[in-house]
Structure formats: C-alpha cells, structure tokens
Length: 374
Image 1 (cartoon, rainbow, N blue to C red):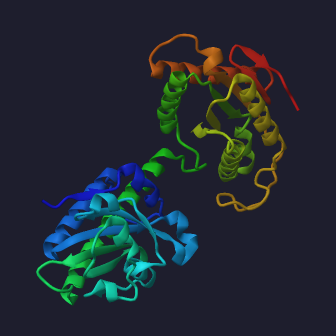
Image 2 (cartoon, rainbow, N blue to C red):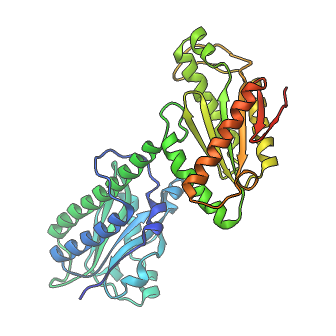
C-alpha cells in the first residue's frame, strides 16, 4: 500500500503567508494537507509512478529571486516520510528549473539530464530514473512544483502525462488559494474597518485568552481603556469625514506606540480604544498611558490629506482620558476566565471615567486617580 505524507498544519502555515487571492471557499490549513495528499493520490492513479511530491516556495524568501528555496510539503513513495520538510535551492535540479522557467519538464533518463540534481537521491538513498515536473501557479506566478518519479508501465512520461499533471497542478493552486481566502476572511472578521485595529468582538475573545495565559504563567497583564475627550466637537465643527480621519490616525498612533510589546490594540466603539498588554505591570502601564496621552495632545491630526478626509486641517490639542487596570494589582479572586476578563475591562473603563470626571487629559488607575497633566 502506498503511503502519503504531508507537512503538519503548523509547518504549512508559514508557506501560506501570501498575497490575498480571490475566491469563496474557507477550508482550514489541515484541510489543505488532506487535499494535497488526495491530489497526489489521484495523480498517481492517472499517471502511475513509484514516487511523487509537491514542492512550495517560501513567500518570505521571494526577494531572493532564483535563490529561493523549495520545501517538500507532501510526498508519496518509498522514501517519502524522510523527504517531507526537506528544503532545496531553486537554483538546482529539474524542480528548480521548472520553478524558475515556469515550463514543464520531463526526463526519460534523469541522470543524463543536465538539470538533474543527484543530492536529493543521495540524501534519501533513492534511485531516480524518469521524472516529470509541472509548475504550480498562484495568480499567474509560479509558487511551486508538482513532480512524479519513475513512471510505471512505461519507460518515460508522455506529453499526455504532462497534460494530466497540469490539471492536478491547477487543483493544487485552487486548494492553496481557498486556504488563503479563508485566512484573509478570518483576519477581516477580526478588524475594525475604519482604524485597522481589532474590533470589540475579537478583543473579548483575545482578552479571555490573555487572562488565561498570563494567570497560568504567573505573568501580569495590563488593560488600558482610552477615550478621546470632547471628540463630538471634531465631528460637529469639521464633519464626520474629518472625525473618521482622526480616528484612523489615532489607530495608527496606538499601533506605533505598542509595536514594542506583545500587545493587542482594539477600537472598542466610537472614539474608545482598548490596549491589552501581557507582561506589563502597573507602573509600566501608567508610563505607557502617559506617553500615549502626551503624544495625542501634541499630534497635529489631518496634517496632510488622508484617504478619508482629503483636506489639510492640522488639528491640534486633542486630549484623551485613559484608565488602567492590571491583573496582578486589581484581580485578587480566582474564578472563571470570562469573569476575570470582564472585571478587568470594567475596572479599566471605570478608571477612564474617573480620569474624565477629575478634569480629562489624564491617566487614572483603577481605585486611585493619577493626576498628571502636560
């Protein structure tokens, strides 16, 4: 019985970080592994061979051009188990030639072919006699290779075999494209369309996960709840498009200020934002909140024409109020993760309202306002 092997989903994932493609199906990565194995099985039924494999490039190495490496992501045959996960340079071998040229290639006597690369055979203790390789494309660009080795019941692979394998290469492209579309749809569902930050639904899911992870690992977790002061005045004075542009720029500012942390930045709704930052204690959280507050105060929003608001306004003096709560400082009781999550978020929210009630343009810690201005 022929054994088919494929990379595990977590090993496949880095090879799927590709540009968005169009489509309507949403299988998960593990479905792709099953699909690739099934495609190899069918290809072997139509073009009987002793061995075969699917190789895919790594999109992170695309800038290297011809020097990009190809990874064996699925294979069948006597040495298939040891082959999966092996990486080869696209500068070598028939697979590399097909990847670089985008043209199918077959060899009746592989070892006499100028492009044949014997090192893979040597590493796996295998004997390649005949071989055919077909390019795999995504959006017209070659991203990998489908190859079969040692044609059974025939001395060499025919032009008809190439045509059949081109069909299977198209199936591989569709399977990969469907996964990419599914991944993008999942990302879109997490995001706020205006700011590009995460939305409140994903915030609640991620905050629960962060609470569980930090509590189990004995780590602190900071939650910052931020609200822009008198933001309605921006909408009333300059219009809602200007207000939307300011919100987008605030989102960019928050993303930039938290880039050095393992942080999640979300738009909670309207002009409210929440930051969730593991491994940040109360003192560090207050310091970060003050940095954000000070930068918002000194930033000129709509300083240049934006995607939403095409005019230049240079709005200065926008202030914000921030509430801070941390897992270690403010959560004493044990209990369900969702209850702790809700309590932490509620405490940060309440602290934000304390900051507003004590003058705005300041940071307040749950239980004790911190009155810093500047």
